[in-house]
Image (cartoon, rainbow, N blue to C red; front, side):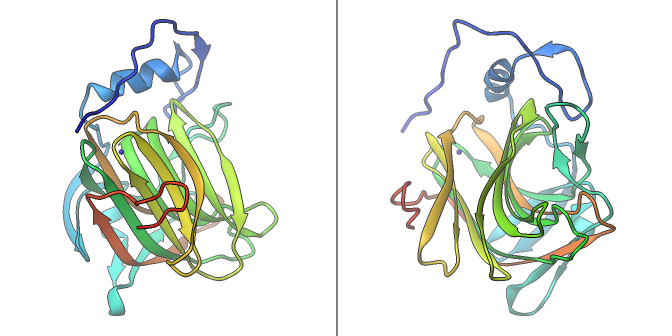
Length: 251
């Protein structure tokens, strides 16, 4: 998400955070991240055995394994039901961890890159509908990289990073119906990118890789408001190598 650099926190500032579970006890996201690094990723899902291109998906959250349909030309259709989302609201009002997520195990001691062409179904009533790439440790420690419909009906790149609670970052507007999305790590840094043509990449987020040695990467569809949505995924790949330039996102 050779050596792994760990941070030891000598000063911890207490804060009240709210997890997806609705827990209101005092905790600290830095402590949670440090604790998570010592444990294996704890997936709140079930085992599965699904191969898409060169990726072996072995965990399914919220029934994801029953919601995908492989089609022609390597296109996979991924469905989500009504009001399915993954978000740990800082105010504990919109927390929801019901979105289906299909996951493959990743050796985070090595570089890796996840890429997919993502084409969500956008509708007038489909607020926050999205096709999504994930990095996942547990329900309160993850990142998603979305092609999502916003409050004004625009379709844009969105990233959400969760350590106890979620942030929410809206990025560029994309006018074409699909986009290429990428998450890459050299073991020290994680960065997210998008491209309109898979040639010219735009970096939208970069941060320190503080994930544990074993994590999960995957795909999802979300439908937080409407009665259901689908997204098509194609050209999916997961390799144990990083991009060559973290600012430009080149392979």
